[in-house]
Image 1 (tube, one colour):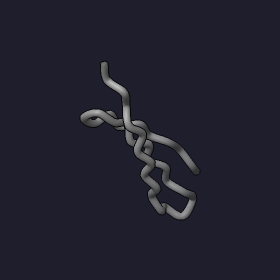
Image 2 (tube, rainbow, N blue to C red):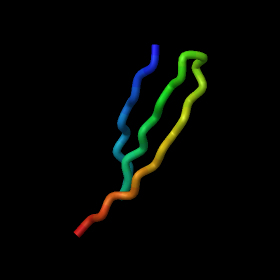
Image 3 (cartoon, one colour):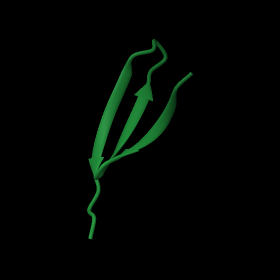
Length: 34
């Protein structure tokens, strides 16, 4: 099935989505650090 995994890196969060065929999609979101 499809699931999402959040991996926190330096200054950003990467959302890794694996589709039903196993193809990974990584979406990076920059975090604003004050």
